[in-house]
Length: 458
Image 1 (cartoon, rainbow, N blue to C red):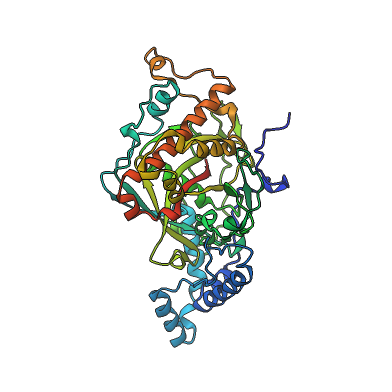
Image 2: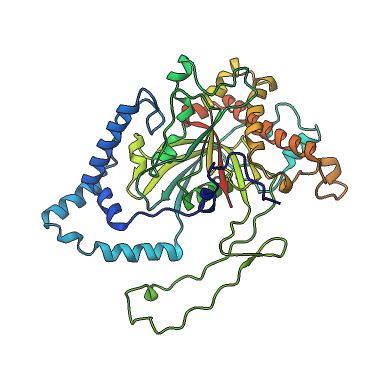
């Protein structure tokens, strides 16, 4: 029997096999592109490209701008001046130091770095606790519960590192069948709107150029690659800093810790290691059911669904696209729960709902938040996520009354699982809508660059 694959997987099945292989450009090419001159040339090329496509597509930053500015810092100008003053001799040692640096990063450091700041009394909850969802499933969750009130905002400054040059992002577009007009192509008003590209900077700053046609009006934009290991780390960071989590997925297996490589054992230092015996092979890591995971087999993945906003590192989006890394402020609201779901193979790497937080607020006239305001959003997200979720692995939390009897989980049928997913989405969207009541949100969050995002993760 063929394994289940997401309906949103790439049309060519061969692209799934290398779906988690991180691309890496040659060092010399990255070095040339990363110079001040290289960045100026690249920004000129991207500006010309954006100008030529401006009538048909959004800019790579997700707006109508045709000027793609380079990220040039004061330190870059100083370094460029030193190299020019020394006739280029200051760069002679760079290749060797670069190799050493890469080896050190691979040996011990991660693909992202994180700085945390909070605005208000933001508290991170214990994960895997599903009281809200259990109450919702048992029809005991109160209307206008204080658990969904936003009282604080957390800002995460995350630097995502990569080693590839600019490439087109593999995008897909989804439009729900719940619309009266299911045509994916837009009218004049939708043609001029730019909301569908609100999360595009995340891709473009990491050298993945998003091409979003103006003529399309999708409900969800999803991306299959190029893959970056840092995408998983970003998702895990957002999850670990969420104030509340609705967890419907089984716990992932414990990661296999690779032995760290001592600095003196780096290639090219000390005595030759050609005569050393090869290290013993590592046995495959066990799956949760006791079977073994081979080296070429990708373990089951999960899906994070959360509300987040993004801001550039400085005032301009260009400051977030540094050579070899992207850096953004990711904003989380403590009144909006995150959802964790079991994902099918072939599930998109990154996706976002094209409805921004500003659009959600427009559905709440006079800040009067009622369930009928967000049911359409819930139905669209449910239809999309139904094509990504591995229903066989989805766990339904026990309603409060049954949990008191000592029961851990239900043996649910498909109808119960679908209701659990729909209730989880309902809580997330309600929390997002009710954040309009917290006046500091509009002060600290760019609501035109905030919305619901979905990350695949381990």
